[in-house]
Length: 347
Image 1 (spheres, rainbow, N blue to C red):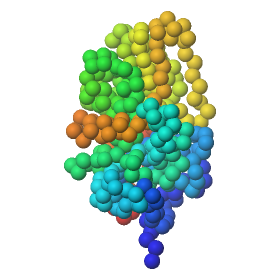
Image 2: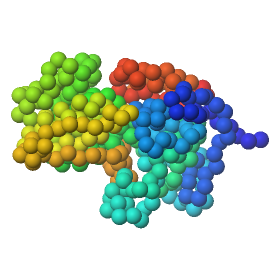
Image 3: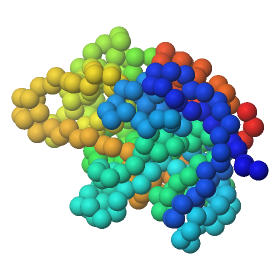
Image 4: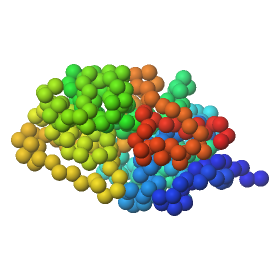
């Protein structure tokens, strides 16, 4: 008798996910079958469901790229893991390993890369497949629900911070204190940076304060760039985890001379063009960088911070059957922190 599992499946762009019983997949060469325990709900999942990006995801699709669980079965050729090991599956499902980008430590932009929960089935299911070479190793003492967001929100913000080149003692502006931003604040503090938090919601700014941010700016009440310049003399670096295009424009003007901003968040739809001051960038020798998820090395480092308790995702658990309601909350901007699906309840 064929073994089945519950999964949330997208059959048509823009439509709700459907909870279905489908066959448990078999691991191929170099793959492992993972019994999923938890999977974070990322804004990128909503972008996938709504068809905001090109190319569109492969349908039918099981979203989810912040999955943690236990290795349930080894595919042929796997000797780096054993059944029972605790692992995490990030957005970067795989990369070719031999192109110029992979060889230079930039596997995040490999042209042959596959994406978990986008081009490959993801973690909104009781079981999933992943290449053994690309999963993250998670310590046995870790909370699999708190660790789940580290697989995307964690490693993505961590790499974005690294790409600013900010040094301990310098000021970092975190623009957008959502699922990624509240984790960015913690990584920044753990790395010795001083944090200025920018958002349009007082409850999210209060969360940033509780996590160690020293300066809070509500962009709805005052010009955030002017406020950052006035209060701290400009930021040495900034990371943008918001999705409003205006936030990306404002972040450049928050920098002090020689500062660097990393763009992390991704606006949905066609609203992804910004206007900024060329003269400000040239005369201030500012740097604007994109930062796309994280490499396997970044992933291991990001997990280590979290496993030591230096970074903790603020989470709320929800059953798989609630995923469409969670997406509705996300559309309305009502989620503080991260929602993590519980795949171990049988629901």
